[in-house]
Length: 131
Figure 1 (cartoon, rainbow, N blue to C red):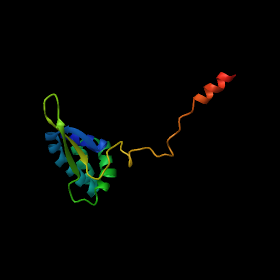
Figure 2 (figure 1 turned 90 degrees about the vertical axis):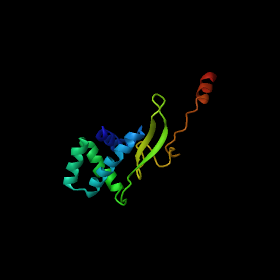
Figure 3 (figure 1 turned 45 degrees about the vertical axis):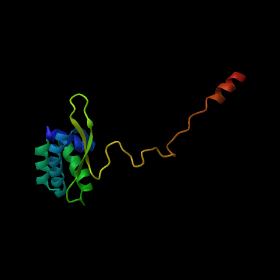
Figure 4 (figure 1 turned 180 degrees about the vertical axis):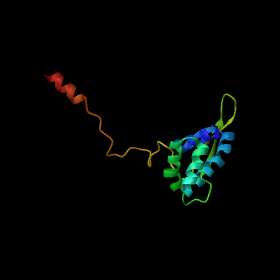
């Protein structure tokens, strides 16, 4: 379960889960980043043996570990959320410290150059009505 949770964290950069699972997955994720920072073949094989997903290992070694190169530890953060309605368990977000979550952009809004103006339909209908 923890390996799958860490693989989801690697792929999606942010995972919402219960607080207990987040606290249990945090040391596993941080050990994987430590292996990724070493960048050796032995580290890659140890990470693959623990995570069981090659695509997650590639993302870990190519994207996440180089981004965490300057940090000495504390690669993840746990943000507490509300309690789940069904069983009142505490929810939390487990995410990487220096990486934006997948799907997030820098500013959050589209640049003005990419925004397309809406075509004006009133002129076309008025021209058709006159003829």
